[in-house]
Length: 270
Image (tube, rainbow, N blue to C red; front, side, top):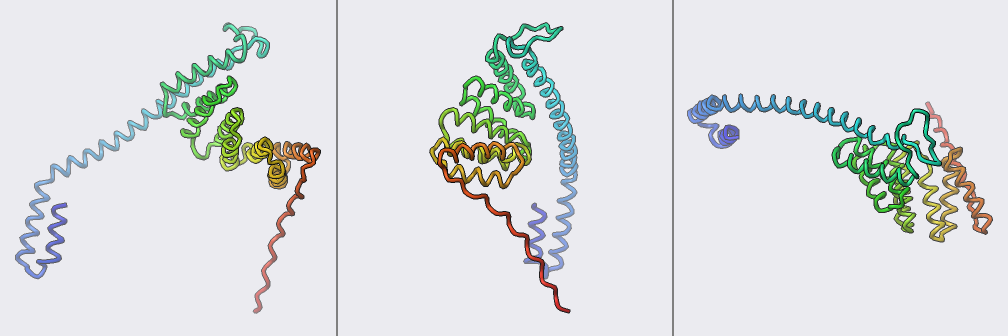
């Protein structure tokens, strides 16, 4: 930076003085010579920095692999039999869980310990989604919301499972009677999931509107859903809801007519 400053001063003030200009050039050469070792060291630091990045990348890769293996081990809990639900298979050596609740309690405990040890990995985010579902089944709705939020924080923006996490958040909020907040979660499903759970965000939103007593508004959402996403699970469920609303005397809006095709451009006269 010192050499550059001096050069700028020369250009601005001393260009008309050849002797001074020559002196400045000599000083600049001396300045560079005196700093050859520093420049060399800096280059070495850059090279070592590149090596450091490579090492860090490899360490990160190994950390992800280790975390994936640990997560697989934790999820073996789901393979254990449950009395009356998931019968034991020939060769099973582990004692069956007495109930699904007992299994989910053990699963949450294992996943919580896993996430503490492997926080920041992709597997940790995956574990948060699984834990959120287990927490919901256990009736721990705040815990479920927190776990789903952790998944959304760590998952890639294009991860289709984000739709499932938003759905889980909505269900947990619904269970607490927070219907307006649930709508906000469900509204994010469509953009998050793409082709995954298509239309289900609108379907759940309509359900919440019905619970809020806004049945006509719900009918509008459901009607638009059936038109926008025909032949989907969401559209079929929406049709069933519309039938129930109609039986209750709710006015069902007519489906919107499809947009007319754009007119062909007029020929250009030659």
